[in-house]
Length: 230
Image (tube, rainbow, N blue to C red; front, side, top):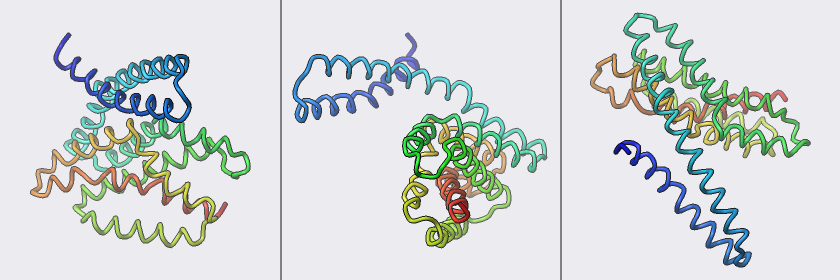
């Protein structure tokens, strides 16, 4: 077994293990000890560990190199507009496939009186991520200070929240962190790293990061605008 393989397994076990122990202790304290419950918990933890390991390996082997290659190759080819379009399609695709998005959509679907169509919600969430990632890539290309984008986006969110249905505002605010899940975040970062790596500016560290922060605001803004008119 290679060292890289063992490190990947250790990373997943380190993430799932403490949570499994915590749930086991809490269930024993509040629900009482049960061999059946303990067995179900251990089986679930084993499936979670295996699934997370395969998921992370797939992301690192395929999606991360793809995002970094897109971000680095297209600017070198002198195709900034193609980079912008590709960034939207890439970020939209990885977000709509993100497990956390499907969890949120399933939760919303359990409330039929919410007035929100689950499939439309998934599209709006992914579109919001794609829109703000595109803006973030343009920021890198045009060398726009990130603080101005953050300031404008947060002001827009605050203003729109006064015109959106009050009961939906908490859901819309949570949508940003939910959409930037374990699949979307690494790919967005890789896309930014690839784009910034070919610019060779002194502030490249500031260029390479901040995309996830901006992307988090995408679903919030899109859902807030949609909430005003729904």
